Structures are given as structure tokens and as C-alpha cells.
Image 1 (cartoon, rainbow, N blue to C red):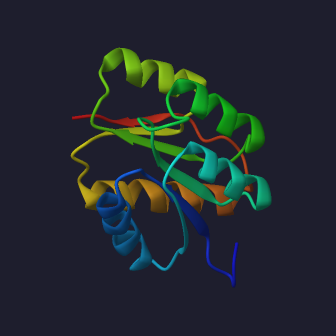
Image 2: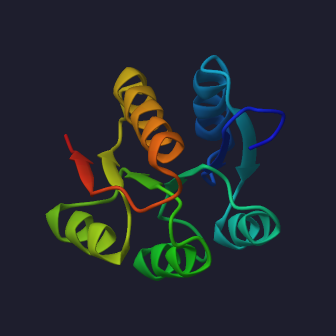
Length: 138
């Protein structure tokens, strides 16, 4: 945590989407960090593991392997995946790789914020641990 605020890493190669997500989460009082691709996300997580990672999976250094790599360096950090390019098979692979929650785009921001709040509350209440996988798919 930074300055008593839970830290959230927002990863998306679409700058407008990243900005929209950050604006929405900023109102919730989180300390926000941004990355435009998987490699930048890894560098940020290696320097300080956030309380939650919110990430797209379709970009350079992305995909299911990306979730596996994130889980390896941040084993107890909740990982919320969102993508416009997923189907049932992708959802299952991502959850098996260690994602905590999955959203299909377009994402309803209220549902996403609620999920983030719940996962951060769980992490704060019980200490860092992997929360059971949740799914919100449209």
C-alpha cells in the first residue's frame, strides 16, 4: 500500500481504456499505477507488488502465459482479467492460470469497481492470499 491506500495496477495497451479505468478507480481512493503492456507490468510488479492487478490480456507479452508469469511473481495478488477477445475456452484457461476474476468487454464499470472493492477488502481482512476465482462474463 502507498500512503495507506491500496495500490492497483491497471494494464491495458489502449490508453483511452486505461485512462477510463484509472478515472473510475481513482474515485474509489486507490493508489493507481499504469502499464501499457505485459513487460511494463512485470517491471512494476517486480519493484512493488500491488494489492490488485487489473489487466487486459491481448497485447505484446500478454495472453495466458502472461497470467502464469504474473502469478509466479505475485502469488497472492488478486488478478482481474478483462478482454474483448475472449470466449469460454479463453476464460477457463485464464482462470486456471491463476486469474481471480474475469470480465468480458465491454466492462460495466460499476460491476468492475464492486469486484475490485470486494477483492481488496478480502485481501485486507485475511492478509494476502489467493481468492477463489470469480467470473463475470457477458
